[in-house]
Image (cartoon, rainbow, N blue to C red; front, top):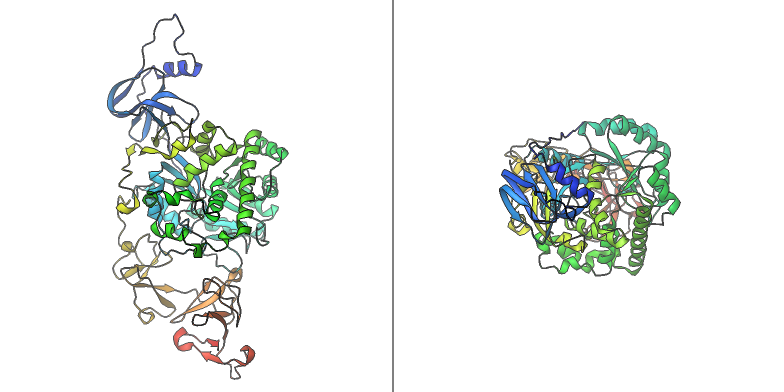
Length: 628
């Protein structure tokens, strides 16, 4: 399993403990006593942040923080002027020094646009820059294509990419047809289906070689439609397998009943606060007694509500383009792309969800439940990096004192990760440090006024990380990736290969005739190589039979793949994405679904309504026709 060692800083001045004890006692120098010499801070090669307020992850006061390399060397609290004995001195008067923020719920590959908005660009580097600029120095990805997110994590750990430290769960464990891999969608490497405890062993056999930092399970009964639900027996089997593998489990939960069911199975970490109903004080007290930690993700319902009501004020910020891709901004301003989000029934439903979530946070907080911050960045209007500032402000809106809201985004979040070297400013902690203008303890919105960010002791150039500057985060560029290997950018594949839409290197092409049989040329006008030969999975478009009710589609050149299914059958309209139910294909010229048929059937009787079976074998590269 993946492990990170904690290297403690050495050489702290001997009287640090004495100075700290004075501060902890809260008394300073008693009246009439002899003055105590102030501790001298700093060292050759250190960075000394002095003159402002320090929040160390637990408490706050006037003080100084000393950074030496990738570790915090010294933290001193004193209301008087602190003398710097050496190193680079940075005057932070009027500012607050905090631990780097930790976001416990991020979707690295989701773009925060409307649900109907599609962007072929992953924007992974853009999202990473935005988090760094916001002072997010560690984050937990709770749902991304596993071969991509684990490759990103490996490169960060190897120092090949400048980025926050990444913790990743990889695929989600959900019932067949469950959230977010609903019936009709191919699971790919985003979901693993668990329909009984017997499925757990195979799931962990697939997962554990990737060394996931967490196992994420999904408890979601559905909002607009009923969804299958993980059984208690399956949850218990997952928890037991995870405990045996020393991996933590975190559960997506939407209702208080989900919390109760998960507690019965031994699950004590939750990726959302329920927003479909209210948590009772009795349940909250049980959660506290059982050591539950909740990551509320208030920013999700808040972002959806403000998007639906036209009050997403971030879009009016003239600097929003420094952190959010231009296409996402344009999409959120386009009424045609908002779809159901812009309807009054949706606004009313999401308003109630927002109110429930805020109320449930306060109920849990008052009962003593651990609250840790996570934004669920990647959902509509929930922007990477910026959303964690919003999340912490929403915790205050819910009723948490600003100090405890800051703890949620630092120390408490680090404790959920099991990383005592993160989320705090103390001797030996990693020197992930955030400096903001003003005092977030007095005005929580000051957290968004970022002045400086140190990642492992290195001061970041925030201006250079603004998206229009197009600064690369690669510290060691990846090149020469071979066929089938993961690529995060077009330039990474070896000559003659292209980075395909599934982010693996494949043969470059301009037409399917240039691909081997069984693979089709998928063109990409953004790719310097034109297109990629994408290997199909060999499903049968006539027999169908794809997992989870997905549709078997033919792409040409003998290539078929299980793909997303729509609702319409023969003669019915295609859906907004040009999809039809399994066994039908969308006729783009009429936006009508057409049934598939077998051109080898002499009677052509397979077509409904007297239609003819038109042979598409020449294009498809296999015997298949379309009823026309």
